[in-house]
Image (cartoon, rainbow over all chains, first blue to last red; front, side, top):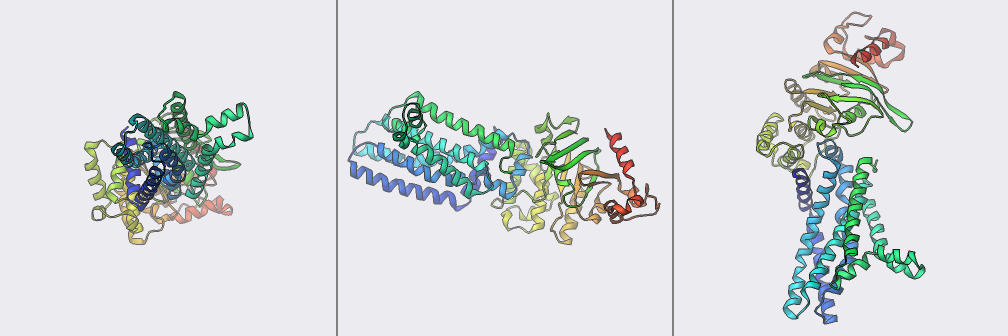
Length: 236
Length: 261
């Protein structure tokens, strides 16, 4: 556990030692704030449902920028050899990196809790539905980070890692949009595959086991595949 | 102990039935032309890649079964020092100590020790990216020894350094003699003459020479029976037409491999 923590700390150190972390934080929060204001002003509702759905769409754009360097940079700098020849298991390396971005993302989401307080101050919203919405967006971000980590483990090129992440995340996000072209099982499958479907429930204050399982299985699957990618050195 | 290690990359055979042993406290120079298989051999010893066949035992443990505990006993400096340019020297070495399992109560002591040993005290607060190549190389060696490994593997540690920096790095390697076994690869034969006690020569993935340096330089085993330089020995082994006048016949090498098993 100490070694995982050391890896997480090192990732956060490097991340916050560069302007990238601050730029991403400032840009994302600014965009969230603008859209929060516009949505609340337009809807005149004491609900964050539309805010969460817009945040979800923005995460598709931003998460690959967070994750693209995680493994790609290590490989291109030659430091992957340092990690893989140290007394660390591959699982430790994967988890150390994953937790670092999860902590950063949690910080980002924490900073948006101000929306909850603002809505709470001006109206009488249903607090549980808003908190479930936050839980949903956090789970979705955690899933997207796992996807980005996996893509980063496939290549030493950060741009390729980001592009592959975009391809996967956009496919997941828009999967339900293709239901008009199919029917039966395929239609049901696309609806269930779409991240949009699962976040929608959280955004309106409903937690179903299938939505939680969707995210947890997605995260676990990506982490296991990342571990296998490291085992097999797929970037070679 | 390395026993009949082979490694294939597709149809290319990088190592072919390599066997040798290293004893505690040895400084062994690994020689060979580019592409001879030196880096592949070192990467197998550090568990970075797995051999296609054969066995490696370090400190009595089989690398295929106890990779994690063996990596704890190995310090490794790859050809390109594995450094994080955005970190300070101190942060990087502390991170290396953490992931290499140096206990928290010993970390400060070990850090101070390697900073002194590698003469890095005056640059410990500097960002690695701003250091000269010589300093970077020493930081690379410092991370390799911070956890007191029993075996130190250095892949061309003097590559690209100026003569002063080379001497500093060689002195540092020489100082390791009493503390650990060292396997050192280099293209510069005079460096081997300065620090090594034994020479392993690898050619097209095969060990073609495994002798004490002193014996080699005295010309022992050579048909010439006269003192040689390491350069002459190297050239003899890499010129097919001169193979009959080499210091050691291929038959003897085969015999040595068998005796190591």
